[in-house]
Image (cartoon, rainbow, N blue to C red):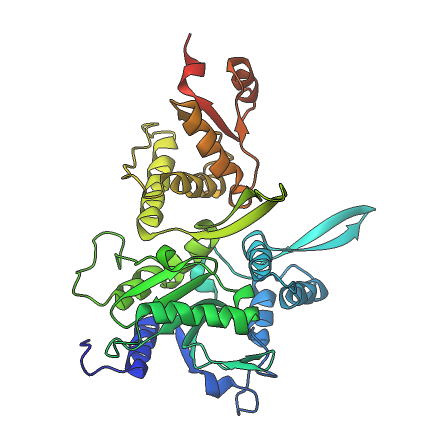
Length: 396
């Protein structure tokens, strides 16, 4: 791809062709628009492709009664609050932890757990790329360049600008995403990843990320970095948006980090949420570490999991959160106990706060050992838990 004679529609075509080569089906937005011969939307306000979602829910949950399946679909369709990020987090829980539908049995309250996506078998899902998908909300009419639907749910929005136009920068693509958030916020209830590109440069980030937090994906296969002469758009699509990697990211590499902020004037403390997405080096490093840990923990394994070396400012703490979260759910680990050992109290506190702020991904509350006796007490359990301590507590 050269940039001197390229236009935006060619960039779009290039992105779609690359997606198709990875197994994404492709349909033009007009072909499924309301009123079209093969319409899949009742109105332009409708975000989710409901028929595809219902079909997937039915197929993935054959043992759950159809009325409970429909209740789960309705819960997904009816996420309403004025806070975009709150809606996004609510849906993410449904996606990763399944949709819980309560019922009574023998006087006890139980729950059906309805899956929206089969994370264990990525190809057991339906992957659809749609361009020029018109959305109308609050009398605002917008048309994102490319949306990626998994089982009818728009998990990825891709905004493209023309690299040949000096005014159409990647920053303009980011600004366009911000405009969509303000005008068609319902789209972002279901969004996992935002991608911005000018055809050459390409970055991905979360719905709450500032421009500086949008990162390039520098490897198409996780083994070698792509040539700096290759279009970043092609590298990111192949490396990050192939079906298996995308679903792994959605399930294991997104965290809603909660931090308490006190207003200096009023003294009122508020909890702020930031949605964080793994950068490419974190994604590959954590998966290598998981692989190494599982191998080392086998009966014939060495019991030594290996080392990940990070530079300063590369996100060590959040990589550890992703590692712990994925290890806890890994098949074959049988509810591991994770002990995080540092050699300084301030580092212990800092790491503990990062883990405590990421409870949803970890599916539990981490515990910080107060002293040696407390450490002995919390390590008495047979298995399970995330424990923080300084190495000094182990000294005789």
